[in-house]
Length: 167
Image (cartoon, rainbow, N blue to C red; front, side, top):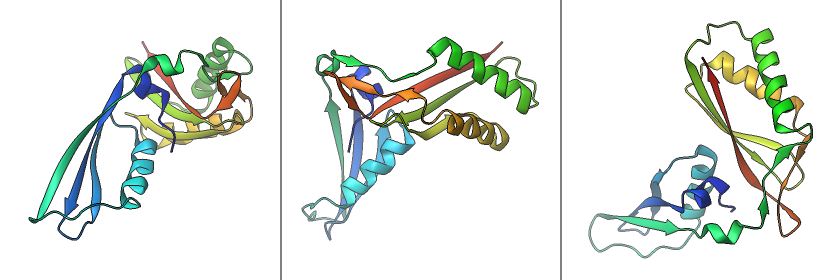
């Protein structure tokens, strides 16, 4: 399991885990929330051995602190065409395929870039189904056209947040 870069920038995250009297554990919250990482954590929590509680169930809050210095040598993932050209092609694509009044709307697209430059979408906030479909279709076309993040010169998996604001 890899921790998304956003959490290093925020200096960590907090999780809550509920453990019952049969030692079954369930992840109940992640703050701040990123859906793809939440799913990975869920799998990790379920696959980890837990000690049963004496009473019905117990909720544990675990703050996870991360040191931003550990990733100081990290080069962020970026599109091969450059970020400005990527934004420009994205906006042209969206305006030509998705017909909606964009006035005063904003979205946040979170996706993962693996160590080979392949994209996997985590979440698209505040978007309807048609917008999600077009964003996914655009990113699929750009999937192999990313330079992965690197730490000490070695490619690594990372997350990328693409903020989109229409004014």
